[in-house]
Image (cartoon, rainbow, N blue to C red; front, side, top):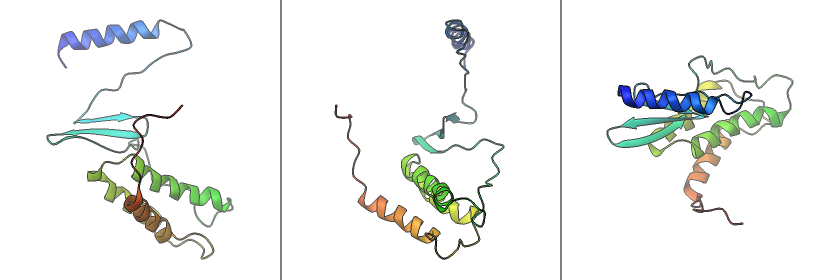
Length: 140
């Protein structure tokens, strides 16, 4: 960024942080064409912008083990979050690798009475094939 733009950004950042003592904002800047925002990573390429699920550099891919004493809904919720993140956050360019991620993260099968990982992933394929377009505005 140019010095003038950087100075304006720093001035604005200082200004909004002075508005209330209990509310402080941070600034994220693009690095290597990538900008994290909440759970989304926005990536700039010559073809345009696309998105994928953002994970912090310290992310370890460690989740609740399937054989732990947590409720089944808690355990399958992790898988469904991964599935939904792939469907809702990822662009077409990054979706396939994100859909395959649960199989890489959970190599051991879950107990047979639980929904299968394959079943959840098939659900992803079904959702992709039958997804309805989102409305452009929310009805009131």
